[in-house]
Image (cartoon, rainbow, N blue to C red; front, top):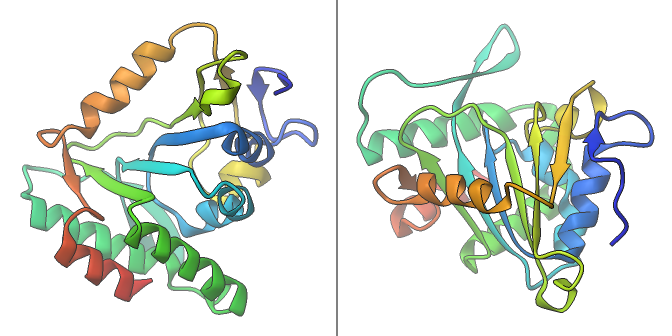
Length: 214
């Protein structure tokens, strides 16, 4: 598990997509806190996830998205919303984020089928924060047989889970494994609690609605 430079900027030798894919191969569980669940981003990690069938993925979404002048923008809701309203906004955001020619191809449908199955198998679990959250946290729990090297690590910085954020645009992220891991995981776990998040894929009715969209 070779350690690269702790700074990841999407320069040719420091591409976030490649480092996350590498860490996925070493991991038994992921805890990702992201702006939004962009399919363009998770698709970029498809091969690494597919090649680790025992992997569990917990994704916490902090924002919604809207389409303005053909561009996708993230936004935080205002006011108190109940769980159903959060779910409705999440579904609407998913529709807007994948409604383009980019996703109208056989590769997308094959990958969508894979992630749908992961949702059905509860390998991919998604929740939405009750309050807007702009943080980006990629937390990796390392497989038991590799924990002599490290038990966990995390990446945090500017990159969202998008194709551009993972590889194309200039970003600044840092990978940390020797300090702060307990605090980082506790931060995620606190937001994951039912009083701080809304279940998306764990709600049987809404899970079916989401799968129909995908």
